[in-house]
Length: 235
Length: 235
DNA sequence: TAGTGGTCTAGACCACCTC
DNA sequence: AGGTGGTCTAGACCACTAG
Picture (tube, rainbow over the protein chains, first blue to last red):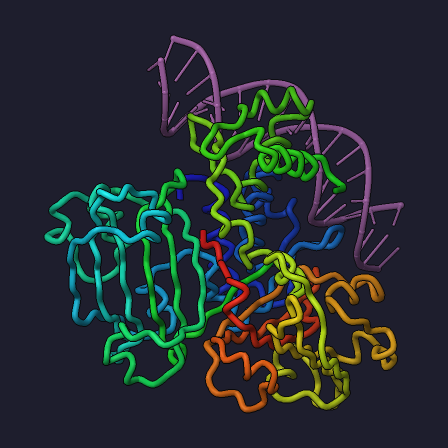
């Protein structure tokens, strides 16, 4: 981290996870934390605010900060941005790719609108099945404008998280995503292997934005709902 | 609001909605906002932080704060807590209740775990179909411990938002909820009227917590996905 | 009543963007 | 180089909780 309050927040999370503070217990007071970390009260308060936003503690005025109960649930909500790769790993499964295809084509109307393109732009389509413990769990389709990565993208791409690839090879950071969640109806274009799993599917449509709020890429994910569960924290 | 920075945040939202600041445009600098509202810089920064958390602006160091594009999407994410009543109204539909049933029973194992109950506790079950423009859109089941509302709850309950009822008649505020989203498989217990809609369904399982992080009630919602769409903002 | 968190201030220094 | 946001400080007053 580059700033003091994120450091302190990370330290406190580690200590909570290690059991130094038990669930339901009160944390040291702001004043005590100030002297322990040798920072001002506002800095400590920023750390605690972050901890609250992460759902790890809650504050009660006049009383103190308390460690929240963490059902396995709370730990892996989709509120924080994460790639499919991370989702699979969070469920303690091993991630892999199958049948990766990359090709170029013109964007359709929805893609033009969501990615802020012109009709003469060209997009790459990355089409693949992703596996957890060698079972196919997601059919995933990423739509990435050529204007962002250049014509040689197919040579630069490597299996795994597209987000990670964009960050490492292009210096593009995904700061935010907007996801629509749909119940799957009959989708003829679903690949055979996923259809055969015969388990319920969710469809995620996500637009991924950079730090300036500009759309970077679009993704469609058809996810099996029997191996991975999805939680949202609402505040 | 009770504090200055939320006031200012609300004022700025109103002004953005009114078009005083256009999408993509820069807001006045922190310093300018300080003198306009006659508050210190930290107070303005708290307002702007709130605005960022709501997804209405983003900040760029060294440059300024910019108004975010708001597809119809961004405006109604489920990140912020809202009752089914509000969800329906946000979609510009008229909300109603059908076939409301309330009864008492023992909690099952999942309810005991999620609501932190003992096996000898008793819960109220509020079972109803909710409508949008007179079409059934949700089959909704709320599980509410008698220990929270007392034995006379059925007389006090009125159709509409349970959250609102708890707030108005019991002074209980829901501060947070944890929701699991599932793809619906065959659910025999689904009511006839919703089954007959023959449209895809999502299942939401939510635990609702008060400000101290204690569970208040549990809800199961089987939602039609053709009249209402669901968005999540991930950061 | 004493202690705790919630809000607010005034000022400082730094990192980054823009010209 | 000047302007902008990002971090941090030290101190004040208030609202709420708890003994």
